[in-house]
Length: 538
Image (tube, rainbow, N blue to C red; front, side):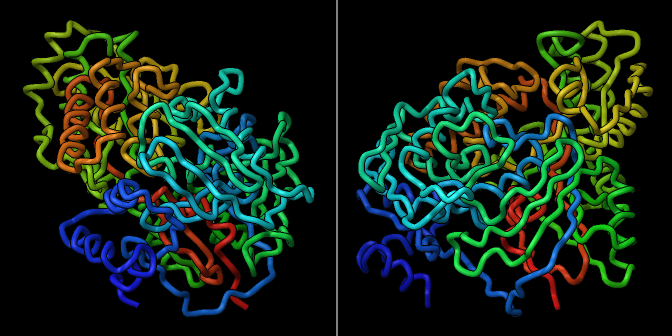
């Protein structure tokens, strides 16, 4: 069926012509969504919207079998509480146990999950119709009260939700019918279904305070969970998606050391491993029975210079460090070309709001030396790295060599992956982070750069930025919204204590018997939602 026919089915022939014309002129999913919203359309997100491509698998999925999977992180802080999850291991487990109102597909378009449809006239008041016949793992039927509880708990400071800064825009959530929930925002945001399709907004049972049992509506049930060690999931026979999931059991572990992960895969101990280093790609490909799965996305490892303490409190030191990035060398020698150049701001070139007009910051020893001398920073500067932050040690060593040429002594402090995020990431005056891809520019900027964001890595605060961010959510004029995002990228590039050299591809390794993988640019492992999509060849 053509895109035009799909749209005609969804919205009527007159509207479909208007939307096909918009698509030809470069409009994307949020623009089409905004057009539908403006017309008060009831969207059922039928999957054909805006020409979403759905690839049919050549093979028929086979039911049965068990796989072992290794993520790149493991810590005693591992959690089954969606609100507190913060890394790929948590997210992967979360998508096994829970569902959201929506799920994001390979184009990061929200597809219906626990919400069957929605209706909004102004992008401020949203009415969600819940899917019927869904039950939690313990047999309880999904009800509006579960959704109300799950969304509102993020607003309670006592929950300590990683998504509180996103949930702050929710004014109220109420059951408005036996199968209906109404969400009112403080201001319009056409991206609400995208936000509700992210990991933290998975739906849990009303009143849940202890998440040890992992009771959700997801494709797998929890059999065993040992934080920092492993988890075992078994098929949910009562899953609401017919025929899914395919596997009987998944054992998921975290292995912080990349070499150990790859060895575990190639020795037959694992069927799927996350975060393979480019240097290991040839070895995996050359081993019969194994393959590589690449997802290019907006993932980045960033140099963080806190503006509230240490040398980063001097803006000239920050500029000196940013000019020490030899990005081309990092792309070639560290990422082995599994990356694209970045420009010290977090929106990557695959994002339609990427500002290509921002002049690329160059590797410039003269400028670096000028700003270093102006800053007055002398002596050793510790730089904290870890395998947990992809390529951070390699990036730091490239910078260390360049820094020596301007009289700056960077002392690279390698920390183990275990405990890195809880002990070092937000606490080091100068160190590295790693940010997984986010579903929209708004989500990324809200979680990492808004002044009051829990994950505001460099503690950069700007009222002007916060105001622009708020205004951009409600702006329906595409040209104006693009300009707002361009202004925000420029501000981060110039003012924030964040240096971003590259946008990284996620590389996973797998047994050739494992089928069903396809890229979802939220990150590797199919945007961490591999579990309900993969199967084992007979």
